[in-house]
Amino acid sequence: MKRKIKVLSVLIMLSMLVMVSGCADQDTTGDAVTDEATTTKEATIGYVLWDGEIASTNVMKLVLEEAGYDVEIIAVDAGALYQGLADSQFDFTTSAWLPLTQKNYWERYGEDIDSVAVNLEDCLIGLVVPTYVTIDSIEELNANKDQFNGKIIGIDPGAGIMQTTETAINDYGLDYELVASSSAGMASELKSSVMDEEWIVVTLWSPHWAFNSFDLKYLNDPQGAYGEADHVETLARAGLEEDDPELYQIISRFKWTHEDIQSVMADLADGMPEEDAARKWVENNPDKVSEWIGEN
Image: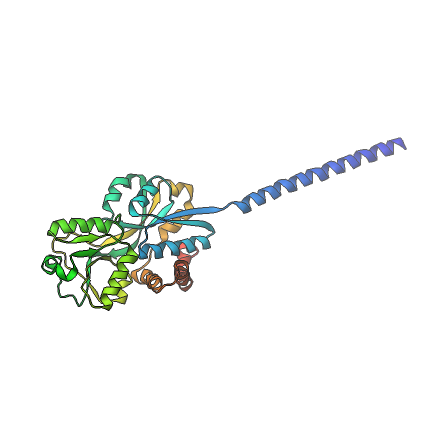
């Protein structure tokens, strides 16, 4: 009898050990699942507050969120953008105008930044006037100084186009003040002048929604102060490709057209909130979004 009780006790103890072991395995597995489920993919995008870059950045934010990323976007001026990439404060940007407009920043920081891909081709910069203005060249500006109140209306002072315009003023000997503003401020003054058919000359670039909204023309640049057409590049911090290959591949595939970007910019100009304008484009272009994510 005692032998039977002893055997029974051993069996009960073995059963309890099996149950405890099973629970421990379940807890370990559960922890692993929990850890995997709570792992978040993150990305930080730097950008400048130009309409085109607002458009591309907000579109990429939604694309990356669709790919499972938690995305932060940070607006800075051009100099801080390049320095931030060199210092790994941002993962990437879609806002680099090269090889001319932001040449000085690339020369300073380029060795510490990864050039990923061109995302937009054939981007012009220069001095622009409404088509009713009866001059066609930068060389004619001095003779018509009073018509323009001696002012060229610019954007934020750190922008590459502003530095290029300072060079153009020197090259052409222009007796003009370059007025620093912002992209939105410049566009507001342009719109107001066009409505009243007043003469105005502004720093502008293509693509820009203003060319769809108003009849505008670039002033001829016979000395080539503004150079040939730029392109817009996606730049990344050093090491991103190794740290997050998935993110790097997505931003490597990002490329769109003037028609694409100007459709977003037009909605922004009409007062649509930035994320709403970006979401409208994303929803209307699912194939392109899938291609960038790598689902096609």
